[in-house]
Length: 352
Image 1 (cartoon, rainbow, N blue to C red):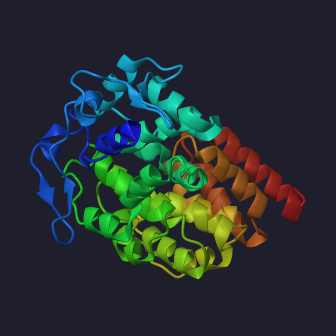
Image 2: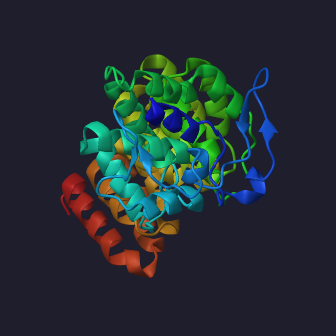
């Protein structure tokens, strides 16, 4: 079947498309065991990868090469050649639009048949990390299709333990805020495929100073259920690497609140992280959070609103002296709320 050989050729190159962090992808990097290479010289575009000069058409199940229905062939080519994809985990308030990638994600989520398989081919060829959970789910659901069995078997090999463990040997970029989307894809693959042997490496990466890698690793730790996953998230939390430790704490809040509280109360927390220690304890309904909230709220903005609310909700009579001190030292823009909290708690506990 011509379409099958073409489709397998599309996926034969394991490296990122041109333009994806070219400084890191310019030379092949052999990692893992045997002759396996995770980084190889990428093809110049979908046409070359598929064996046709200048042909950007996408393989269809059950037929030859035809255009991607509903998506421009040129857009598919540009998508693969750009190397410009969403990161595994978004950070911050700014969101950059990726219209074509998001259309592919929509096909994976709600599409069917040929269009869904085409979206899967493109996203896997790109190693687009943001949608890897959808990619894995689509692989499992499309596998029973007898016409796509051989193709899907090749795709699933990218999630093999050998491939993933080898790829995780790559070092994250030195620049904390740059992105290595190929590494992020494999970090997330270790989670969605539940590769248990990768857990120690995922914990280490979640505590690394590289933001994108640490966030991707923390997200993968959440994929592991039970005590194994909980303990891994604890180790991420105790690495105190922003923002991964915050996300690990939030995950534990829903998974194992008792373990979270035990670790937060029994650990010496770095000064810069103490406000999140207080917030997480408060969200766990622990009154011991109040002194910490009073201590740290004056140095925090935006989330200080929640902190004042938690002080009012959880405070005990024994906390009133600290709340009085807080009302006296609150920042100018906090003073009204601090006085309101003190007044409400004074009436509650001493009737005045």
